Image (cartoon, helix red, strand yellow):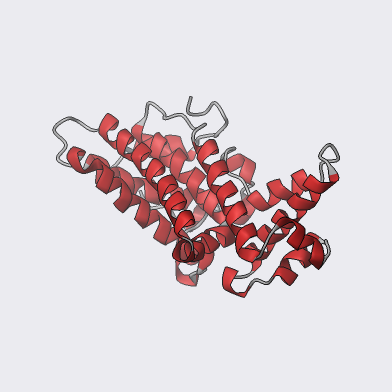
Length: 256
């Protein structure tokens, strides 16, 4: 089921709303809240600082980010920063915690389809777009995991919840005779690591060779999902299943 470039579907020409409705840019959510006149002034200032930090992390690595960069992006005074946060690590930890909470909550809204391949495809498309829209924050999460024990544990807990959902789906959609059922949790981690490495190369390291291979978000989600389906079912999805996902219009009810 090789897809050629003649499809003409590229990431730049495919609006996010047409891909799936659940993913988000935390930076955009924070800026929107910061502009909400219904929030008290102090809360809007806090949100500006968090949005400024998210914008800065999306533009540069955590290691090189300075408080001066954050307040410039936020449009507030340098001294005001320290009214809310002790240092750049404190604000980064707060927005990364919010990223985990929001991504976990939105992922929970995606209901498994009765079709096993579609379930993989929709979930992978969601995660791909969350990573793409928050690539700088995902990069920062790796740095903070090395530096802060409590954050590393919280990050690991979130990752474990995601993988346990994957493992439950593997067991539910496989026959009892499937030899990998007993190792479904480990398999889920292996498959998750595959996707994380691909997305890190694509959106953080911006590997130009990989960028040439991944034609658009749906193409990448399709290839990842086929590999995942092979690993969990021991066969390819049918052409009908693949074509159905290519034509899928994802809405909040699409997989209910």
